[in-house]
Length: 577
Image (cartoon, rainbow, N blue to C red; front, side, top):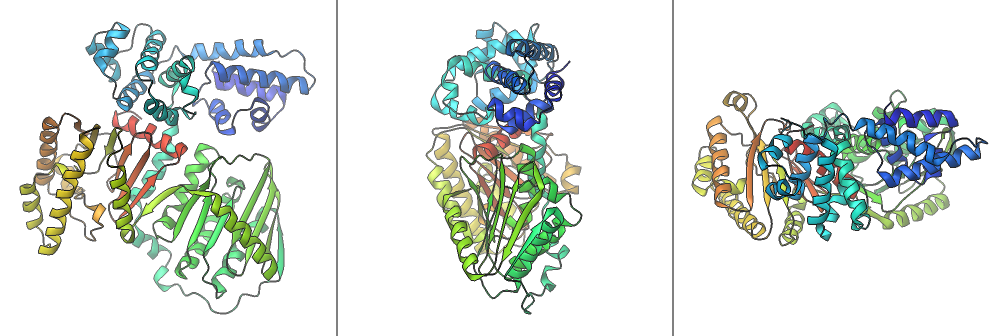
């Protein structure tokens, strides 16, 4: 029996909810969810905590037969049985060695393997004779040799723990072992959906689908009662729509502040919910209102990225700023607070009884003022979830990148075309002259390219950079031409490569790598995005750059989101997942 099935048997036997067990054990709901789905397995410390929680719940329900030691033994036997199936080890090992830039020869000497065998294991061409022993030796090697604060900060993101936890050698080695043997690529799916939404999104098409150009912001006053209450999911849905109607029809231009930690699955399952909400938001944006949205990332991994994916069209308008609350934990009560200039919507529920919740919509001046002060106080406590840079933010983006210039740390990129800084100036001039580009624009691009070369040399003087680009045939390039990489200067026209130009730029990049000890470059056939570039400064930030319609740059700092992108990116970079 596998671990997830055995754990779910205990939950059924105790007649409890997963939330009951999470709270009793002191584990997060997201962690327990991963254990229940089989995407993660607990380390020895979490296994003991979980077993103690099961025993405690059993006693509360009058069952004295279930003991912690018995539960630990049963669950641990399931973990050990899973270790007979090691199909995850090669990809996890490869992404892990890539992340820390581990010297494969040193590792081979430590685990008593030859370097060629390590290479074959990484590529999935063979497995060690004793995979668990091999993974344990790798974990021991890494915990001993890669133990400085920067390494621990980087891996804390990957393991969803704190750097302080990794300062204990035994815990550090255990976390590495669990990652190598059991880290599942399934966690990458929500991240890929999020990135795909950015890659495929076209603002012009989105606006046309909403008939945005022909939308008329009504001027007839909305007859909002002084206050109104909404009970149950259907009415709560209507309450949100009524809030947007009141916002659109008021004369106020004050920005919206929106915050909700209410469950999302129940409402989004209602017919027409997303469409009506998006229409309401589109009308508010058409009116020119700015929206400050406080997201709650203390949800399941899937819910977080599902929510962010739905908001991508709104982010791309430049009128929505995403925030989050640091250290926020809530598993009992749900709250909603939407505040505008002349109207406010407040909501509440008990988390497991969302359908029994209530919304309160008000246009009463005193109540609106009260809720506005609450919303503003909440916004002051919030942190940017991601920084979104568009054409009007070009200087701010430059300031951020310049400030990061001297910060050490490996940069890894998955790009839709080779980087600008590897193209020789003569090749760049020929590329630009072959297109109908004004001389002023050509000089701007040439100047930007020169700046990029200086920029990258500064980073290479203290850190490593690895770039990966698609391996494309001439036919693939002709059918779907990759775009020249100048989104950083928000050039309004797309500049597609010819097959000859793309392949020449790839060769120039490989030559650049031969001359630069700290730079590596590869082509791969595992990447599917055409319109975004992803740059990762390990453990610090990830930048997702949209190439067209319109150009935009999303810089992610939040540890949970960053760790997910790092994990997915490294798996893709190594050809896995």
